[in-house]
Structures are given as structure tokens and as C-alpha cells.
Image 1: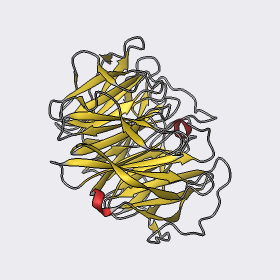
Image 2 (image 1 turned 90 degrees about the vertical axis):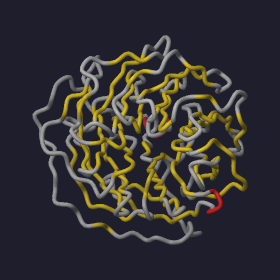
Image 3 (image 1 turned 180 degrees about the horizontal axis):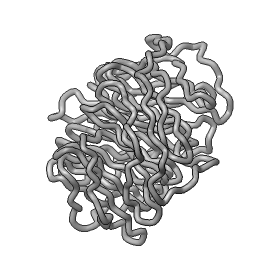
Image 4 (image 1 turned 45 degrees about the horizontal axis):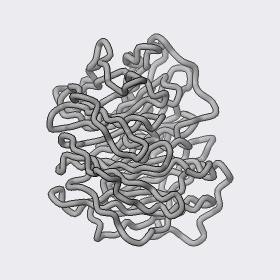
Length: 402
């Protein structure tokens, strides 16, 4: 299942990841710049130890790290070069094999804890595995024990306060909700959990932590929930129709729009504005916006200027301008840059300088420089990823506590 890991989307985006100190200029029309596609770069080899090394270097305060989850039960930690966007492997951390196949990854906003949801079989209950994060090195330490979740978990998100965690259960047609202990990272089930929905494929939480949006692949809909102070979910009326086979959802970092990636019927992106008073979704004029292929995952820049969709089987990244005010999508002119084979996750760095795409089939991370004025992507050399990467999250170390 593709996973969006950008702060408030593919998963909920941690505050430290999505709130930059500099935002690129806002656009209201299609730029004349062209997305340039370079020749597919060679993969830059990085070290791949079997476990996080004890000599992991101390990163500078405010340094960024990337975490990439692979289906072979491995999380690889990378240091992010702030000038070039290059990823340098800092080591691998195993996910306990007994938890099953890992499918999604989320961090608390302070980058204090990481959570992996895994499942042995889609027809049985899954597990949430918890790790603590070293604030100096970014290294992960397994916290003993696992937390049971629903059947066939498909996505995971932490709310912007760092107090609540949510798991979408596709087979169980529900969302499991947990309170997070800020001292230990431990999880406890929220009364009323799990909360019913329809074939939950993915979920996203708005930046205020007031609303959650769950896409339902079986019914081609998105369900809106209000998040109560306890973390409980309250449905906000009937689900809204999307395109065919919705599989990813994000809320833009300003909390004004919801975008859903639809993998069926030629591929499209459904777009909604959010009623800030009620959380209800209102279809944007022109939606769905057809992509001509199947978008797998989505990410938006922090100033809500640009949206990027990684697609398959074309294996490319399509860029869009987000029209100021309306939230409509206008394609950035030119040929989209290629990715590796079968892109399954996408993330942007905190200052929207670089985009990263995890490619499941060839085990690489594609890296792109983002033009802050036009949104144009220029591909940089790829780096090696853990086997079959399915999730990527970028975090800033040394941020405020949850």
C-alpha cells in the first residue's frame, strides 16, 4: 500500500517537518518554466549495516534525518545534506519479524518516537511497533512490546500535538485510535476505538489536529471525522465521492484543502476545500483533475504552492500549481521527471528544497531539487534504499517536545 509521509499527509506530517522558516513565493497561474528530466542517474552507494552502529555521528542541532521503511523489516536512517539534498546512510534498524510485514511509518512532531505498523496477514489484526529516537544522532531504539491494531492495517498517522496516533485498517474497515504517553511513547487505546469506516486505505490529519480524513478504497469515498479532545473520532455526515480506487490522501499544510490520489480509471486527483468551521469537504470546481496515469502518493509544499504526485506504471513525478484561493490544480508545463520503478512514497524536506521518492521495485530513493519559484524538479543522483522501500519520513532533530 503506498504511503504518503509528508508531515500532514501520507501519513500525518510532523510539525517539525512541515513548518519551514522560508516559504517559496505563491503562484496563481501556470508558470512558463519547464520540468526538466535528466538522464536516469546512477545509484550512489551508501553503507548498509545490519543494525544501527554505535558510532553513529552526532548531527548538528536542527539537522534533518530521513527514515526509510523497507518490506524486509528494516528502517534505514539517513543524514540529509542541507545544501545538496544527498542522503548518507547512518545505519539500519530491524523491525521485529514477529510483527509481520511493515506497511507504514510515522513520527511524533518532536521526532521523539517512531511508529511502524505491520501485519502478518491482511485478515488478522496487525501490530504497532514503537521506537525511541536519539535527539543527537537520530538513531532508533526498539521499545519492548507491541500494540495490537485492527485487521489489515494500511496507514498510520500522528496528530500535530503528538498526543494521538491513528491506524487505518483496510480489512477491518475501521480506524484504531491511541493516546501517546509523552514520556515513554507508549500507546493506550482511546475509548470507542476502533471507529468504523469503509475499507480504510489511507488517512490524513489537518494541521490544527481538529479533523481527520480517511479514504475508502472499496466505496470510492473519503470520510471526514472531527477529532474530539480525547482523540476520539466523530463522523461528519456522509462520505464524499472520490475518483476510482482512492489510495492516498493529504491535507495541505495550511489546512485549507484535501487531495486524494485515485489509482483507477486512468488516474486522477480529487480536490476538496475544507469548511474550517465544521471540517466538511466541499468539491473544488474542476475536480477530479485527471493525471493520465495512476497517482500513488502525494506531497504538497509548506506554502501550498505546489503539489507533487508520484505515478505508476509510468514511474514519474507530476507537478501541479495549487491555485491560490480555489485550491484547483494546474499542471506545471513540460515533461515530468522519471522516478525509479514503482514509486510508493514521497516526502519533502522541511524547507521545500528537495523531494524524495521511494521506489519499491528497484530499492532506491530518487532525489530532486525543487525550484522555489516554478516548482520545477531537477533529478539528482539516486541513493540505495533498504529492500522494497514503502515509506519515507523526514524529521528535524532537536525540535520542541510534544
